[in-house]
Image 1 (cartoon, rainbow, N blue to C red):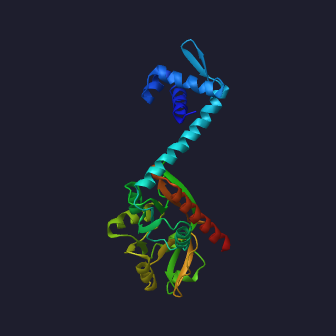
Image 2: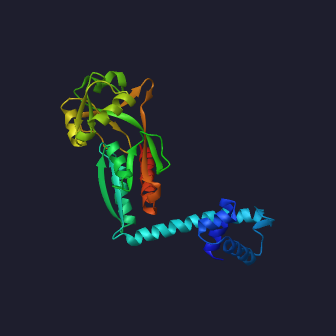
Image 3: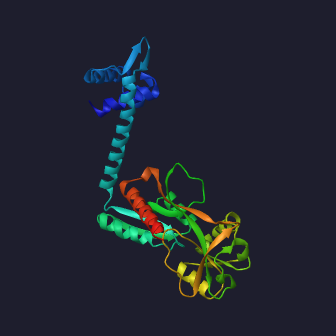
Length: 300
């Protein structure tokens, strides 16, 4: 039995026509008919019941068809991945993560992945949500750790990592730091500090203001260290998410959960990668990251 004969059979069933299947496979109708007859003789069963100019698939043929589809899909994946690996000068995994991310698990995942797969070179970049989205769309990275701001697209693998609670970091000198939690409306008189590049400031502010409901004024920092220095100087509050295990704040900063009504504000975090570029290493890294995050939460 040849894979080619399996492809011909699947094409006939998909097209419900020998003529259209022959056109799709770039052979004559008589040739595709002969190949399927040869396949039936080899198997010793009837896959297609022919009657005049019409045909129906037999129960045995239906079983064979469904398994052929799965096998041929795996073969296509194998061929595509083999070609990709052969064309690459070196195996690499390019990872993007949020500039405001400060969880420990990403670093643990990189270390463990590198130990398991030393043949893979890991390159890491950070950015805002939109910067990471553009990098993924246009091939600048292979996988991103990002918050969900859009409906899931079927062009991507949308691998949900965890729902996490929103917190704020405040200076110990701020009056709200004495509370056990803060409500969104209590923060309106304090500037919100966002981690964003100059080009992405308006986009980040619009999201926090219009989607999450953070009112008041805004300050911007290029990175977490700069943002926390603004917090220490009591210039404003820094929103953070508990994506995995957060390192403890400094002795002069208080981290409090943010509530809206009676519920803590929650965010959805995912690993995203393009379906047409998916490979084993991306899946392994995402699985490892989720495992570490889950273990971190259970240990809290």
